[in-house]
Image 1 (cartoon, one colour):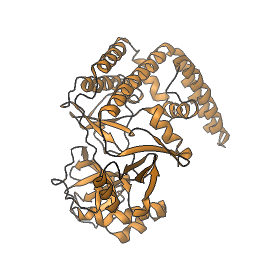
Image 2: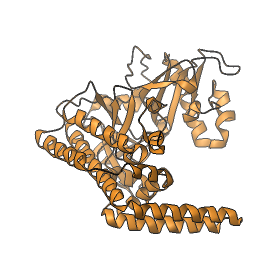
Image 3: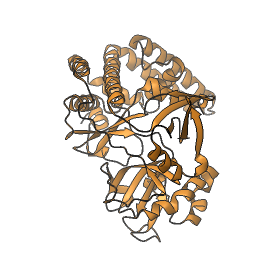
Image 4: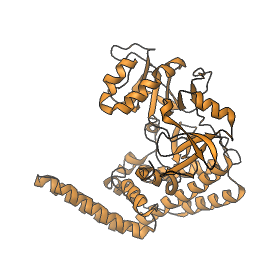
Length: 414
């Protein structure tokens, strides 16, 4: 089997815990040709309204991610069925979680007082909803001090900001929802349920139902990740997306390039540089020829910086060999690299059409803003999540020029 087939084949291995969601366009680098095929399958299902193949969920900008529920098996001295709560470390090789308020300080004390306080605040509330299984959600607020009453455009609003986006509701817009949020002690969006015999092997599903999976609690505001996606993409947008799909299918990439990508370490190099470019120049890839030149310069500077921190000559030599090998490969397969980047941009373009269509069609009673100084600038939700029904794998659909850049630049907004 070729290295590219080992690295980039799309297998059952994608059904891992919902720890890090991949951008749809990044699957080009993650999975090679299989990633391109995956993106095309998702886009095609969306424009054809095939909800039996791909389901769309609203992505909330909450923090931290909370994993909680009943232990599916004995873990050390903790018995199966014991209520536990933690963050994404629950799914590590040596699971990290707490089974009481007292344990939270001991287990998470090194992570800072803020996390300890939030986990302590929500512990009794989440235990009180009697979760039947293991769940993951995004915390929106955990105490009344996380909420603020302000006037925005002359309206009386209650707002909360768990991460980059500010969420809120005006009393004039929806008195009932305003009162519910005002009276709730915590807010959370529960979006994932896990199934399996033990924490390490649990697989996610995204059909979480109040009443079946947990009971309601008036002290908690439950945000809803479900969206009605039927008809969200207009006929005009459908034509645009299908034209992009056809163009992608017409581009033939040398399979040997996917072996080259392994040396370029997408997670550490290519995708890191894309985020750097997004932050500094507010572009996703931009001109593909210019991108390659900028990437080479950035990669070279990064290697030189790493070498400056190393003492052993052998280690420095290995960095030089890595750089030399990567630059040689880029030059050798430059035409295919250009094609790959072109496909990446096309997938990103099609995804943005989808996201913009959903932003218009999907109604939400919750208002969303980006805050800069004392100004609340109206924006859209963080984005959406595409769930592949055949294997419960997911990809995030986010307008990166709008939200991802705001997230990277969040120091300006917070």
